Image 1 (tube, rainbow over the protein chains, first blue to last red):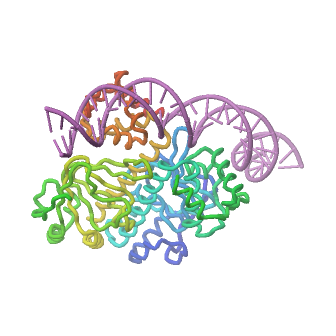
Image 2: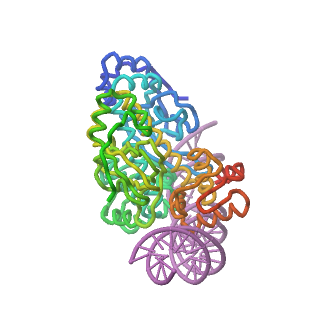
Length: 230
Length: 230
DNA sequence: ATGAATCATTGTTATAAAACAATTTATTTT
DNA sequence: AAAATAAATTGTTTTATAACAATGATTCAT
């Protein structure tokens, strides 16, 4: 299992959440004293669909995938990078996780007792407001996702994914994706074989460049057209 | 366009939101004075995907559908009944609606300036906490939805929908659905023809009874098995 | 270092579900 | 009440995409 340690100085942490600035010094110390920093290797589960929600999860280092497990196939809903809470809606809306989170690379998670976060949220409106904004954004993200995978077919979905990574996630035409082909397929809701096929189609057509896990968007306008038309 | 009137006594309203109990009397009066009650007929749009979020929407009477519009087909995400806020995540997470809401029957919506609700949320932690719970529940609902429509096929999806209506929404074996066949199809993410086909299949097999828009779940265990197996 | 295991790739086949078509039944509208 | 429009139904065809299969390339563990 993963190595863990106690938090020592949240205030000085370069990866700390902006929401902490809305709390009193003593509240931050309270979080610090009730925070466990846990290290996860690529592939390890951080929380598991169906289990009880006991901690707030804050991603301090690395990146993770949030996915829902079906009978046979998974669907990756969101990739998350450093300095973000993961799945806050589970703290306020339900007793059990309805998704699994696992590490895409070696990652560090701050685990804080959920009861403490709820208590702080119920007494610090500025703090809760920040958390609520995060939850709302994540809800909006899933709404977009549900449209993409429902209304578009293969090529459009994959184009959507590539554009999202380049324009919103990495904000760069060239990016090194932490996902395997199977994971990229699970992100775009298709079989791994078809993900590979369409990727190589785009490569052959000079729309993207592929070098292992490094992708380059060569013709974003064409990709955008494909994404629009579905 | 829809008829509208001013709110006159939110405090005495039998359909009022529980969250109002977390506000001071003066704040409730403030809402009341800034609240427009608008009547919508079946089919009328209450808010439209792509437009700016200017009001909080509270469903005081009737029922509505929340759906996302694609190029050719729509997907209904959620059906909402009286005494609930609609799409709160849009107040805190984004400037534009990423879904459309329209009335399933003649309905009454309280429209409150979004800036007022945000102001109250930023100063009343108990109130915001209630709103946050609602947003979180709706996020969890969409998570479940995205799994259903992704992992299951026709029969499983429709079984899911029927079970949800009978067990969670109407809490009754017999219920009169406000949805047309096309809308039921859009709720279960399939073509209208296939929705009809599968419904009649279930009827022929004695799993459900259909009388126009009135459905009766005759063999919930079998339906549940179908929903589980996909 | 070497075998095991997973990943990536390409071609082929099978199938679930949409699209199309045509008819019947309800609902509006004038 | 009649005409017009939309909804529901059933059968047939087409198609997008998963599933299967077979091979080569990487990565991983011992």
